[in-house]
Amino acid sequence: MIIDCHGHYTTTPPPVGEWRDAQTASVAADPFHVGEKGVIAVSDDAIRESLEGAQLKFQRERGTDLTIFSPRASWMGHHVGNEHTSRFWTEHQNELVRRVCDLYPDNFAPVCQLPQSPGVAIDSSVRELERCVEEMGFIGCNVNPDPSGGHWNGPPLWDRYWWPLWEKMQELDVPGMIHVSTSCNEHFFTTGSHYLGADTTAYVQALTSGFMNDFPGLRWVIPHGGGAVPYHWGRFKGMAQDKGWDFDGLLDHIWFDTCVYHQPGIDLLVDVVPNDNILFASEMVGAVRGIDPDTGNHYDDTKRYVEGAALSAEDRSSIYDANIRRVYPRLGGTAA
Ligand SMILES: [Zn+2]
Image (cartoon, rainbow, N blue to C red; front, side):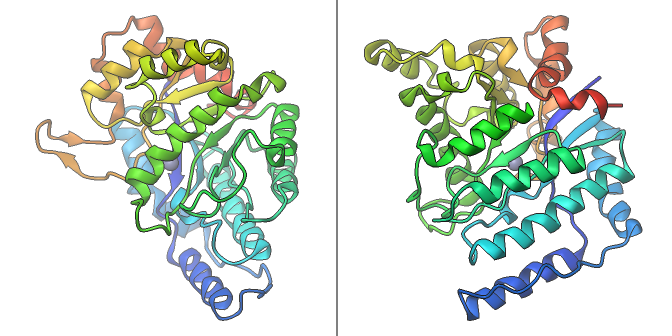
C-alpha cells in the first residue's frame, strides 16, 4: 500500500472561494466584523468533479492508494481578520474535507486546519482539534507556526502559549504537520522562501529548546522534505554537539516528508535521514504543477524519485506505509 501523507484540497468548487472572498471583504471593511458561519452550497457532484480530474486522476496514474488530505494550506490565511473569521472559515474547510473523505473513503483520510489567529489564545484551536478528531474522525492536524503570515511576531513553538495544543495532540494521539500559510510579507514568497524557511525554523526551534522532551507522545511532520534540514544535517548535528542539544532524541518526535521535486534531493534525503523518520508524500496539485522538461514527468510525481532512490524494498515499503501508520495511528480504522 502506498500512502501519500501530504495532500491539500486545492481544487475546491468555486462557491468555497466566493464565500471566503466575501468574508475577507467584510473584515477588510470592519476589523471587528463577526458575521456568521452560514452555508457554503457545494453539491456532492461538484466535489466529485473537483477531484476526479485532479487528485484522483493522479492517484490512479501514479499508482498511489490513499492521500492524507487537508484543507488548502495557502488558504488557511490565519492573519485575515479576527478569531471569528478564522473559526468560521476553518470549520467550513474541515467539514468540506470530511465530505471528501465520506465520498471517497478508500482514497482520502482527513487532516484538519486549526482556527489560529494572531494574538488569540490557542484554546480555540484545541477545541476545533477535539471536534475534528473525536466527532469527525480526523487523524491529524496542520499547525501554522506563524499565523501572522510571514512576520513571525508571535510566540515560538517552544513557548508555553502552544502547550495546550501539544498536550491535546498527545492526548488524542494525532500528529501535526507544521505548515505555514500565505505570506503577506513581500520578502517571502509563499511556496518558496516562506514554506521552506518555516520548515527549517520549526525544526530548529524544537532542537534548540528541547521542549519536546516534555511531551513524549508529541509528533511533528516537517513537510517539503524538511526545508533545509537534511541538506544541512551536519550543521545542525555539529551545533547540537557544541551546545548540548539532543540531536538524536529529537528524532523520536520529528518526521520528514518526501515533497522534494527532483531525484538528487530525494537521494540526499534518504541518504541522510534515518529511514524510520521519512514519510512518503507528494503534495500533488500543489505548489509545483508542471512537467520537468529534463524528465518529461510532473515535478510532484515524487513516487518516481522514491522508486529511483537507492533503498531496499523493505525501507521503501516503510516510507510508503509502515512509518506513516506509526505517525498517524488513527489511520488504522480509515485505511483501505
Ligand atoms: Zn502542503
